[in-house]
Length: 453
Image (tube, rainbow, N blue to C red; front, top):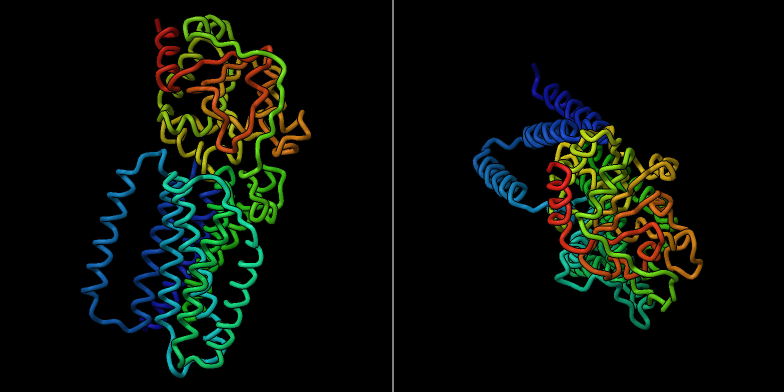
């Protein structure tokens, strides 16, 4: 068979695997298989692309794949589940860096105008993705402050950077042999990536992660046009489109527009001193056991605190014991719980929680009045009734899981500190709420011992 036919079939196969794998990623039950299918598609695409370029000596290519694969495997195995959002942010950044370098490498003295435009787009979007992702990583890991960074004249500075990027890009296309304009585009894109993400507060990181994921796809798509590689165009388009869709889902879950997330400095809004009626009612695990032992319908609402405590396995054990005691157990998953899209699904899937027990917010809310006990584990903003009750709250109008409607609410927290958004939560003062203070894993372990005793 002719090599060109093999290459064409390989591209079609890789594209099909990407599309099929992405489809499988739409459900927690098939996500692992979808990830594997997509990985096989990427390996196929790499091999076919190398054959298409006429590369004969694969020595360095093979060495790079082995070293890179080993680093990726070790990092993925060693990373704690609490650090998964940071790892995703770094992956997005590396994707942006790769697109920047591919676009740069595609520059030739005789490049056509269309190619020059795609090179500029690849470099620009890749640079923004790289530094933006690094800032997101710093905020998520709290190496940098998680709050929004705002300063006087910030919009003017951003406008000047955009004008500089546009001007440099135009001059580069007009004078591609002058490296000055290329370096200007690279430098300004890296600066702009920082400026885009610093005004976004830590509570909005799930949106930022999905948006940067989309940017990395768009950068790859532009790089595909720059080097005339169809499979890279397809893969980049898929990632870019899916990232934008996911970003819109995240924004809808917070009842906010994308422009509001990007430019409002949400998490920097001062939490107004609001007087909340009621008092905190602590409870011990021993007393909580008696209420759980009598419950016939239990909802567990996980949040980032569950990830911090690495309590997903003991949560699964608690759920099994409650079911053995005759209770119906479900998990309420908010779209922006945690610090990246799907964070809670990943944690619970790792603990082998059945997928049919994972209910989205719209599924769990209509059932909440029938719930005997709602157990909130390290979640704060996504169960905050201020979103429904307090018009002065920064999150007013945001869809939340209505745990306050349950008969009894157990809130597991280390302290009375506010959540990642820095907003007071009236749920803690409700008549039907009991606070279980301490490390979530230790508290749940006590409940497990009580129920199994």
